[in-house]
Length: 278
Image 1 (spheres, helix red, strand yellow):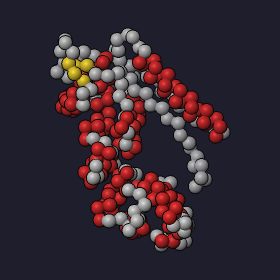
Image 2 (image 1 turned 180 degrees about the vertical axis):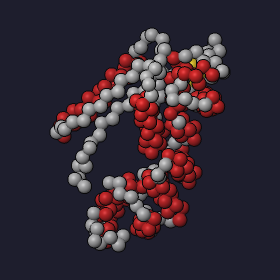
Image 3 (image 1 turned 90 degrees about the vertical axis):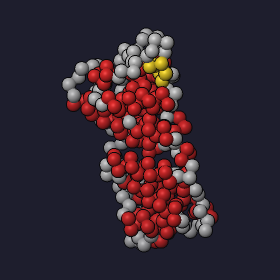
């Protein structure tokens, strides 16, 4: 049967369903979102498919119906089920396990990310250690790092992190025997898998929470602002955030003084109102 799109191009089942419907409706004009609800047995809930695309939880029974709707073969069906598991996981541990299962099932996992890159973004302290190597003189004894890093990380995990940085070519010893980063910064770049980066960002947000509730031992700026604004003003703010990020990167790149601190900056701009009114 016609597949319309390749399911292995996706790690988000909602995005897959959206793109599948868009591709199939070109060949079958009658394959509308309303018709999908009919085919799913949801005649009395004409908005069901749209609600799923917006984040509505999908039951196991409906997962099976979506698999049938999309004419998925056995392996594709399992892949779809795991995508749903990643999206609807109730804990980080379950989500992590599901993501690893997704990687194992993908015919070309390097198209999602390679194993080392996954490991790098899977733990916040990998990026923190990368920055720490620039701010501190670190040899093979990571005890000084373990005593200072916030939040606390075990010595064993820090050693694993350093091994990873070395394996990725992100750190090497200088002539004095200290581990130093091999580049100024890291971008998610070709490994910018949406689900992976989202989980990394969630860890960073948790760091902000811990920094807020922990008595400060280092400089910290915690600020929030809730406001009403027009869509035009929001777009200006969005552009301003991007400009600020670019300015911040420029300041960091142009810093000629030796780094003596490691900082975390998270920017959040989101709506408290559903634009669909639902």
